[in-house]
Length: 395
Image (cartoon, rainbow, N blue to C red; front, top):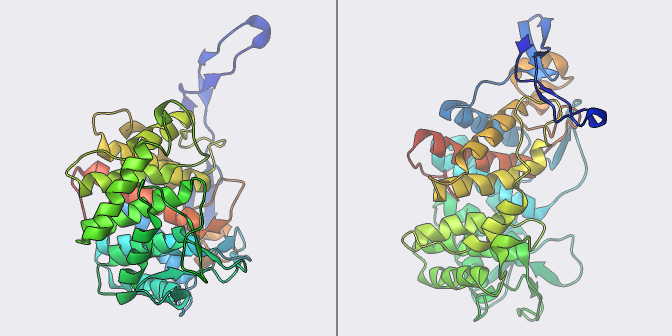
């Protein structure tokens, strides 16, 4: 296929900078009993990104999770590609985040199967919850043997329960715990001592600060005044002592949660931006990480999911800013990275992989956290393209 967009590499010996030249793109075709399929980079060609394609992709991702969820709510943490065999390991924070995605998808689509899956995921988290005897409760990771619990898991569990919008008494206890995790300055203390029910002195807790602020803002938006007050205090800390000068330098390795918290805080407090400083710093530090859809050397899709969520949140918060085009490039990249029914002839066990997102043409596993982050980003892209807000589309 002639392609004028192919860039010639620079020739260091000639001091050249390269430029647009006549080139070629090679696509392949696969003939099977089901017909002839066009492939690109070895996989079925994805549809062009639009709102319907984004939503269809998210629904397929949700069905992938349903195919890998046990009756007790546990997911297959990783599925090996291309064989479709379940891999080892588990991660409780990522279980909670995946359940939050399913709850948002249920709210967006109204589909009963996604509500039921989110309920099963929450039941698994409730079974891992310990009550502290003072109205608070925390999700305990049974893999830890140090007597402590990380509050980020409870924050993600609360996000799932809040998105599901159903009465769940344990959610009140999770929220009560998170309120006490925010100190008078607005700093989130991320590790709870289970025996005493207290938070030991801690340094900054980057993931916990963003996740707890986000969960409390969502809970406050749902009508909990104590959660709302703690969320606003935590948001002020994000813009203050947490990361002074954050817009000009990278403070932590990954702070996309601050962007999601900023989105929820803007809803909570009449459009006033809080937590935007660390978000801007994170986006500026990762400005060069933007995918080139269709490229065989595109950035891995799985690790890009969290960054894409941040870019999408910025695009929705600042419609006139520079974020929209970048968000849509992520969206097309994710569609290109999804296993599709048309890939069945290439897969020993297609039902085990269809709907999941592979990292790249050469890294074929699917993990639940990649499905969560990519799915949540695409929910926001769906809103971005439709130009109207839908339930579940934002954090």
